[in-house]
Length: 414
Image (cartoon, rainbow, N blue to C red; front, side, top):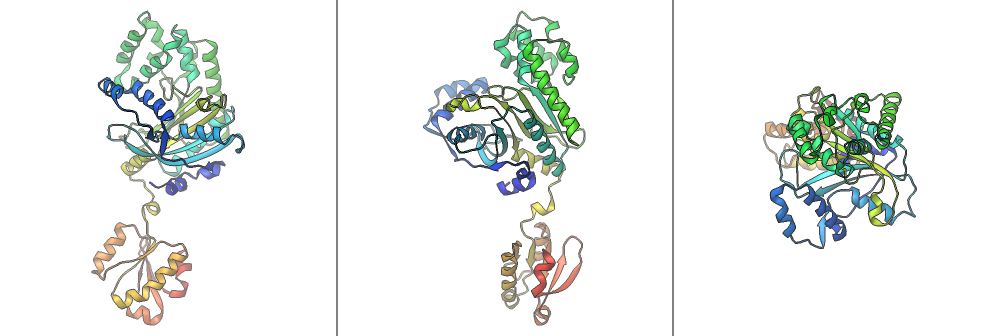
């Protein structure tokens, strides 16, 4: 999927974001930090290898967030805050290629920095809803808050083990509640069954969770989450399901508040895709690693390749997007082809994607080519049409054919 196609599908400009691009190569300073993150989450069998691997001076871009933070620091005196930007570029991961996981893939990021307002989260949720509504893909927008997870860890007497606890809780859908409880008791040997009773209830019920935990940071997280949820509900006609999920734990190394994850709503469509297709959150000090502390921001990232996978699976790709040619001229022979070439050039000059079939092949083959490419119009110019100065134009959707004067062809197509 090209950057321009993603921009057209998402209509991100409507939200006042400015487009930005970065170089492919990252410096060693950033790369080493990312390698440490890879070590932390790598499978056990891979950790020894990672320790011995040679760290090069340069690395391929891992994500778009860290380069964006550096850009903000470098241009802090030139940009206007709050600064909104979107960015569509490929990134690379040392991952095992499989369904939904790639070593090279496109991310489409949208961020707002220099503002603490939770209205930014609301606007990003609206953006998510508009994108997937336009694509005809039903989704669930899951939201959580790091402060809620931190409050739970503090209540359990283990504030320093918040990340470990959150990562385990996040596995409930994958390995089941009992397996997660066993792992949690390993992390906190002094814990009791009652400590994790909240997981046995509805993890999407925020009111129920409020009965178990009362720390100040927990209350702050709940307050922020409820504000976002209430504004979304009151201000916008959101078609997507927006729900709280305490098991949602992503980006815990840099998210400090809101956490967002989007998945296909499998109850509304026949999809087997279980990976997230969009995610994001709030980060209060991402620019700090480059020397500019306390600049708050929030952003989301659409996984373009995963979205493409779901679109293909559900067969909902818009026909006008899959077609690269709007008009195709049938080739009846050398004389007819020479007559058509100036017409092809005129259509292209008018911004209409046009081609002339290169060979005077059998009619059935040429029409099959046009049909497979989802060409909108097929133009026929034989001897009779040449003598009359017209083009016979067939609308491939309706099958309707019209004879149009060559000079008026553009008006009939645009």
